[in-house]
Image 1 (cartoon, rainbow, N blue to C red):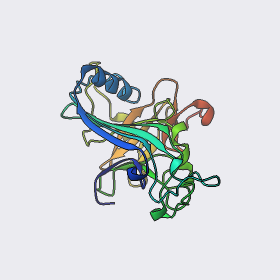
Image 2 (tube, one colour; image 1 turned 90 degrees about the vertical axis):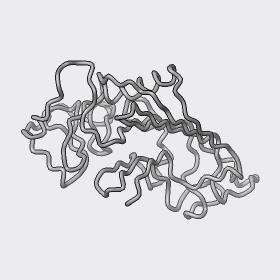
Image 3 (cartoon, rainbow, N blue to C red; image 1 turned 30 degrees about the vertical axis):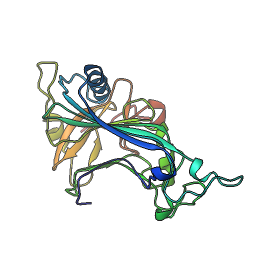
Image 4 (cartoon, helix red, strand yellow; image 1 turned 135 degrees about the vertical axis):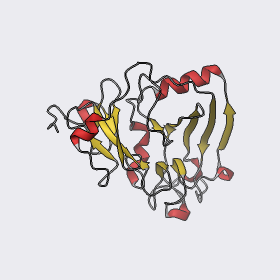
Length: 246
C-alpha cells in the first residue's frame, strides 16, 4: 500500500440500507481527558497535552449489497457499530478504535453473501504509513476472524485498540528519566525482518520498529507481549515465564 491510511474497519458500508456515519471535531476538556486516559493504557507515564480530537462513529451500519430481510435471510438487518478517535497535541498523534458490535465482515462487491455479510475479502483494521515499511494490521484482519474484533485488544480492554500514528521517536514523560535505547542495541533487534519483536529480557515489553529503528514499548500493567498476534495480551492467552535473554 502506497497511500497513507487509518483503517478502523475497512469494509463495504452502505448507509442507504441502514445506519448513520457521524463525524465531528472536538476540544472538550472531558473528551480530551478520556482520550489521554486510553492512550496511557499502552503508553503509560506520558505527559501529553492533547488539544484536538476528530471523532467518527459508524452507528448501526448495514453492508453493501445486503438483501431485504426475510425469514431465511437477515440481510440488511445485520449491522455494525464502531468508532475511531484521532487525537493530537500538535506533535504526537494517536488513533483509538472502539468496536461495539460487529456482525458482518464485508459487502457483496467483495464477495460476501448478501444474507449474512460473510465470506469474500473480509475487512481490514489497523493503519499504514504508505511507505511499505510502517504499518499494522489488527489480528484477524482480512480473514473471517475479524468478526471477533470486539473481543481482541492491545490495551487489556476487549474491543479497544490504541495506536501511535506519527513518526516521532519519543514521547514526553512525566518522569525525568529519559527512555534508554541501550536494550535495543544490546539485544540486536533486526528491523529488516519484521516490525514487532518480543523483548528477550522481559515478557512485559517488546520492540516496535519504525524507519528501521527499534523502539522499546512497555505493555500495560498485568499484560504480556504475545508474538503470535503482536499485541499485549492477558497472560493466560500466552505463556511467557522465562525470556531467553539477549
